[in-house]
Length: 325
Image (cartoon, rainbow, N blue to C red; front, side):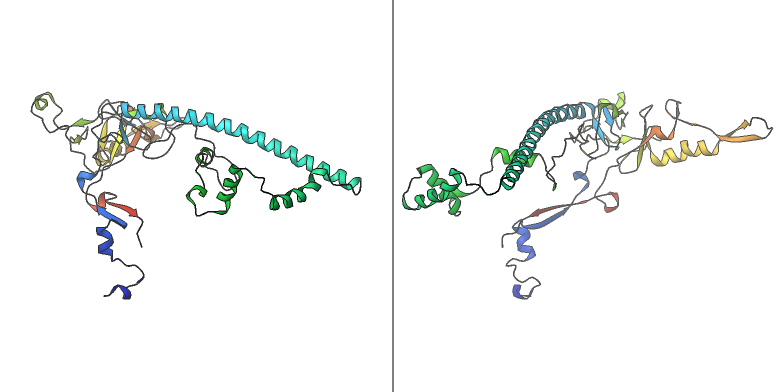
């Protein structure tokens, strides 16, 4: 098919040609090597050391996430100081504008109340000065260059400059109402974007393949896959939960079948007050590692890893580059 007969025939390049030139939307299929493995830190992209979990279920190395929070907290403190200073300047400007507006209203009221009045000498002399400028060139060289920039927009010197004030105005992220947005009170999570504090981090224990003393001397390929603390199965892309009190990492399937199912099925008998009829009550859940009683709020779902298969999650990465037409 000829290019002139294609839909949108104004495009001089075909899709294949644009792909070779890295123009338009480029997409590629991600393989398993491009995905973050379970147990890797979301910041350092390597095996998590002293792993902790955020409320969103993402795993980080303690050192990496603490350093991130410290840096972001310092940046937010500086942004908060600039925001407070800018708000003070805005308040002063608003007060000055309101005072000027009130002064103009008072002058207009006095002029109307006292009837017709003679114009001031400055206002009366303005037309004469304007007519004089047309006949005699009294402007300086700097004034002439400034006026030339205003009318000669094709010159490079006449292009608008990105000043420091404009940069600060853009950084303030003003909305349509002209009101500056206040900076957040605390830094956000790198993955979820939700506010994050140090006390929101939960320590977990990751058991890995080849972490025993026998295999420590023979393992040369780096840290192995993470294992379920109960079944010992390798954790790849399966749903996983963690118990806050003990830090145990367990496959969701094992947790549902072994712990949650036993709690619902194994019921004791409790004597009701004032009656002789026993009431069945569920046995509280216990951690299979430490035996400590746990509740539903003590169980958090972790973010699972992805592979090259479409069923595991997002496996296609896209990038857009403007086309040259």
